[in-house]
Image (cartoon, rainbow, N blue to C red; front, side, top):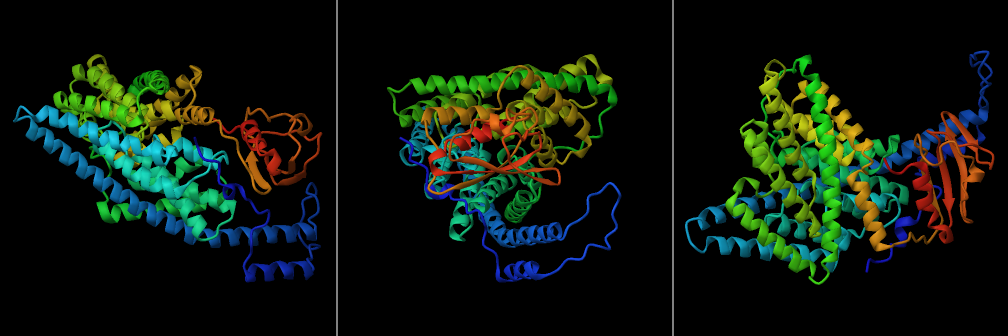
Length: 569
């Protein structure tokens, strides 16, 4: 049974404490007189009042105060997350190297295969068993759990998540499960944000920003991609481009990336040759690549959810037994087909270099897809970032090789399609095109492929969206909340700040028609540069930023407000 949410997660003081200097400025504002008579005004502009000037200065002081408090915390979050990412990556590299050496040695003896199966079964079984026993929320990539925390739907028990995610991920991924280290690093980064916020006495709003910043720092450190980490926070995790969120995430991502580069080197994650800008005649092929990636992205999402559903029905076996069976089975596959094993980093390198024959690509794609599905369905502490990038590179190389056969002038180098395929497939599955584009550019260092990346990712997004498929992290979040049947719980009043997305349920609706429960009140609405007082007849518009106060007895209204404002893609 999942634990009840920690009440401290939802406490949101309506006023954040100010420093003595800021309080002195505000006190002076109350007594000062503001002369605006000489201010030049356009005939169409309303007159500027002294109250407006004071309010602008007061808002500036408060924003400056929040930044002053948050920047040191963000630095600490980035530093700790970067160190965690480096240690986690180093241990996994050691485990993969040790496993490969064991398999190479085993091929020389009759007992090699049984030992390989035993190795995979024991360590995968232990790694999977740790998760439901100590921290069920550490299952999978952890990104859906972080999103639920930032939506105020679930707690973040960092004292449990950090050790379980680290140890469980190391054992399961090190044993050979086809999972990535990037998702766990993102969740551990979020847990570090929670830890720092509790230790340094942050408010609830500041805590949310630090959790999101830690998640971005985790991605930045895992991929040596600070800009991708920042964009991931803004586009996928927090979905808030407010200056406060941006600044905190920026600091944490940069610090996390610097730590990773100092300790592991500054080379991109994938060593890829620098490609020249492809000819414009290849544009139709980029469209084809995007459409194929979009369709196969839907296959990935539905296959993953279907496999999870099927594994959930296998309740006769404990998670540890399921993990051991899958670990042993994947060891057999890796024994006979070594290129399919592990994280897939070497396979991606070969694919990006165009060294994988076209005839082998369909087989490798199907095998890696099946291995990813079964590995993730065990509930192990591992993500899908790296596996989906492997599959995307294979899709791209296949399209490039076939295109080179029929239109050689349009495809001077088929490996360029492998690079673009990673971003397109990521976009189709996660539905975060900006993150996908920036991530692949930073990981490969190929800035000349920006136009193909934009075209392919746009087409992949449109196809996946047209097919009615939900983004994978949204689908996993809904699945987790439905299975857990958790309800938000508040100890004190909650101040919630949301933005109405275009086409959301609240877009174009009057406040009086929202049917909010008793104890939930929309207080103010910011529209462009205007601050509006809420009234039943006021109609919400896309882009409106509204503040609502929710009493403990109306805690479920937090979900209603987020869904109505357009919390999904």
